[in-house]
Length: 108
Image (cartoon, rainbow, N blue to C red):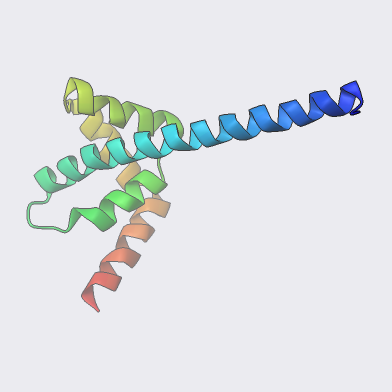
């Protein structure tokens, strides 16, 4: 028979693992929703540009809070604060470097 402390530890591991899986699913869903919004912003500001690589860079360099704010726009509509958030993230050095790198990949 398992000792009570071992049983509790095992239960905590299972609960934590299932929470991590649920959190990953929520995070992926939220990121995917935010990507849709960012794509719309990029396509509106830069018509004819392949938005996907730019969107990936913006999402990858956004904080969790920013991703949640951007994803919210899929429900309430894209507002100026959404655009400002996306543009602000795109102007960060890490994001700009990522966009430049991805753009070079597209060229050749």
